Length: 78
Image 1: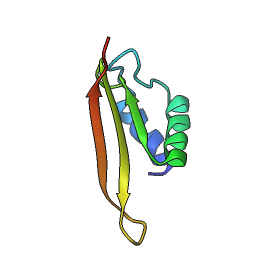
Image 2: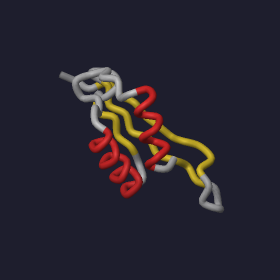
Image 3: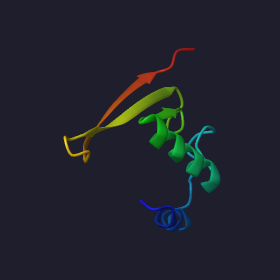
């Protein structure tokens, strides 16, 4: 998705605060997306649900096209 399209979507639906860790600004989200693209995986550290940590990565075919996503979630202790 282009940055312009992303901004249009955010302007339409906003960035709802789900937990106190949810990303709440377009600037912070852009930085996080840049980091995700660079490292090749995404991390959700209680952004969607308190006490849950998730990590996900795309799966590519031989042509470099994303064909699936692999993700793992786990409960955080204490």
